[in-house]
Image 1 (tube, rainbow, N blue to C red):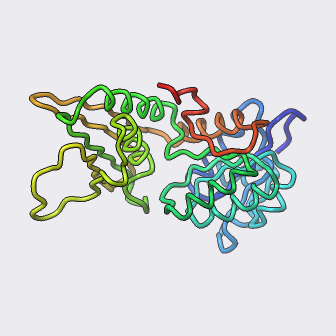
Image 2 (image 1 turned 135 degrees about the vertical axis):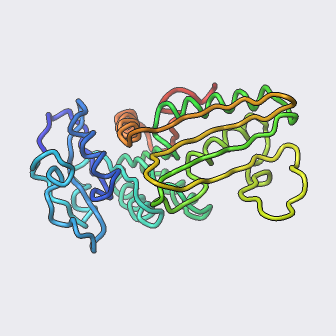
Length: 275
């Protein structure tokens, strides 16, 4: 796909998936961006297909390939909403080439997070559990409310997604949980309750609970609930179209272009770090 010399040229990974196709659409609609390449797994049925046709745009001349290293050479960065193992492979490539790497993939283990952090010594990485601007504003609000209210207000994070999602709690739910934990100045890993079943006993004050629902085609619903004495505060975001995640990821890519290597979050991109 041709663009001006000043356009940011990006590679879309997982091009055959729902988010991959949405990202290809978004690149075509975004001023200052051009599609440098599209990649998918070697055994994917979409290898060799025209990325534009696959995304419903009409032919754009960009063929989907499994050779990410080759297409990354002529690009400024890579955007991926894939699977954790693929993220690590892409991080190795972007680090070696000193490129921008936008990570929308969720479900990474602690060890995988460490690998990504190491790659950020050479790559400019923006990693987020959710690239929606609304969700990131919600996280800032959750942090502020958690800081204001004491342990009399129990915090519960509720999320629902489509029936194809493979990780739980969602990356966004964990992002909201981390925001609440930061507001309370506690360690989420030590105070997180991921599931309740059977005789659990009374709820421990200060814990942050998570509940995950799966079904249908739900794009993503998230609520942070502060349940206190005789009142309840609920902060909710409902995603209606994957395009909000794609636009946020492209915004992050443009922000990251030309910045020094490091591991950044959407809070950095949106200037919400100190909220």
